[in-house]
Image (cartoon, rainbow, N blue to C red; front, side):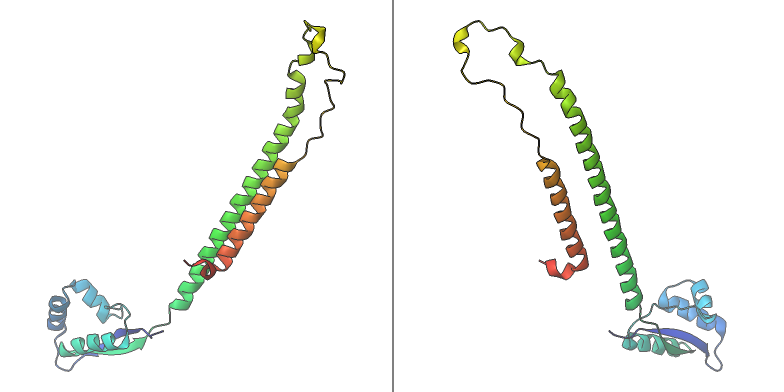
Length: 181
């Protein structure tokens, strides 16, 4: 990681007129006199840059009669990495929250459907109440069989799919380099 430097104002060269220096710097950099005045008061004029570019900026200022020095800036990569990690963690928590709430809604809908299902089965007209026209259609075996006990296969498959998706999401967010294409 390359270090970044900032050019800081130290003072004017001997015999340099501050108004003339301000005008010359304003024309040379095509900037406003307010920015130049702020530079003279300690505000940075240039963005942090590598050492070579900062030295060129200091040399330009010295040709105009301005004394300056280079100041090393704090590395910003660590802070930007922390900010990136916190954003990633926030996105992860938001995704997990969304998945959890979706699972809860699915479970509530399945319970509602299970509760309404016996009512729907009872309200259906019984086909066995119709009168038979011929006795020839009667079989020796009884036509009505006991209904099979319903399994919760749909519920279990939805929950297992959601859990698998949750695991894949967690692995993707924890190890993003693993899935680089």
